[in-house]
Length: 329
Image (cartoon, rainbow, N blue to C red; front, side, top):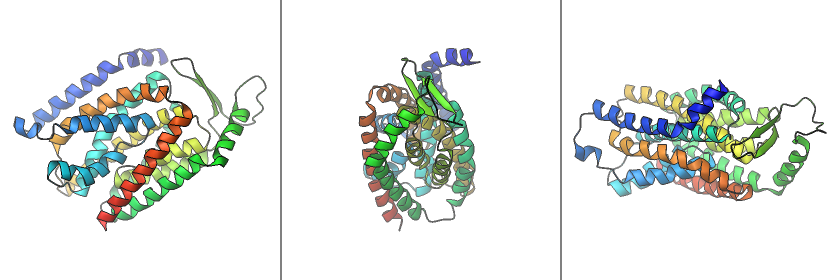
């Protein structure tokens, strides 16, 4: 089974290309519009490519940047606003494709802990569905403020001296070697395609990670993002190596984004909220490409530099979310 998966992943770029072509054929056949409609937002392709490359490199939800973009910046560029429900739905559908693409790339690169990812998805899915349903009844501005606060608090935790000291201590205690003495733990040695080893304890910190993915999953359902941001921080704080945390986070966010997208599509159809297919015609191929670029960038960053980049991006997201929350008051 593993050999078959490895062979399929070697052809992954062709699979992703086929998905992009099939997506365009599908929406063109379903939505009967002229060329002017489909090319109206052509400039969304380079923008979506840049956003997808950034978010996939650090392993956070694509909607974390797409939703604020659609709410704040898109109206300025397009001259027409999008409803909040449209922004969330567009962000979720777009990130479903982008993170699925990058998850395949990270899997091929050997940076996904599949057991860890499956457990996180099982914890998150009920909260994702609950959040998606409740999003049509609860004020969204409150959740934007809460996520912004959580991101800023996460930055403090990631960059604190105490966390760095605990990380060094963790490496010493959880190194899987001849003299390993960490009792009752599920020790893991993950080797990537370049032969680099990542040693950590999978069973340690299960409860904090479950809380992170549960809370993040709820926000993912409500506002279109949250599980990538809170989930990856919970992994880092429970001593999962940052590259493994980023890769595994892609798998978790991709799967939960699909669940959230389907829930939002079903609910929005009941509420008669239209879907901007001409925007998705540009964003989906772009994020599929961005998902393929990201693993190579992530693998070439130094760990400390990557952590600081993640922290800086979280600060930007927190500011953006605060602005979005104010506009929702």
